[in-house]
Amino acid sequence: MEMRSWLQSPSSLTHGNIIRREIFSKKDPNDPHKPGAILNYIDSFSRCYLESRIASIPTSFDDRQLIFYIVDGEAIFEGDDLKQEVREGDGIIVPPGTTHVLNNEANTTPLEFLILEETLADAAGPPREDVLIRNYREQHLNQGHWTHLVHPIFGEADGLAKLHSVLMVTIDAMQTPDTHGHADDMDEVWYMLEGNGIHVVSQNVYRQHPGDAVSVAPSNPGHTLINDTEEPLKTFYFARYTR
Ligand SMILES: [Fe+2]
Image (cartoon, rainbow, N blue to C red; front, side, top):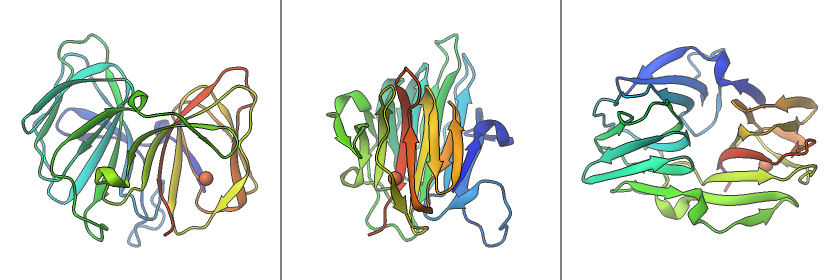
């Protein structure tokens, strides 16, 4: 378990012009002390931005699938034959071999977004063949763990390679979910988008603010994200469960 902010990560570039801060990456036996290298299955989780009036360069990866989540701003996404405006709350699955571009040229504000990377090696099934864009607001709200208000974004049926679940989870003011635990044979990460709360993971107590990501595998006897404020908190969540 670990809490890490994107501010703790060095800058790097991807897609030519996308400025990336990688928060968590897959465990690397050749570099066991790499900061944030704690994931078991998912290859990379980053907070990124694209400056105003800038486009990324056309990029494709044969060995991996990318999942974007738009945190703030608007842009035009182009991938193969698809050209569509994307905005806050949109998730995008970019299958391997798909040449894609994000274009922020029409806007005066940076585009803030998250990127998940999942390599195809050891994937359970074949990857997607076409781009999928979906806003979390298109999915029905569910409730679980007492107080998690869950908008699904993507699931296994959408052709995820390693991930089982990508969600937007809200916890309302002054509420706590139940406490439950996870072993170290899965990945589950909570990234704070809006508001803040106290994330208890095993014996660790984290004050989790926007831009902070908490990994909860392992958590013994459990973890719970308590909203001790008078405003809702909003998180981006991804997981690969034990099966
Ligand atoms: Fe959990």
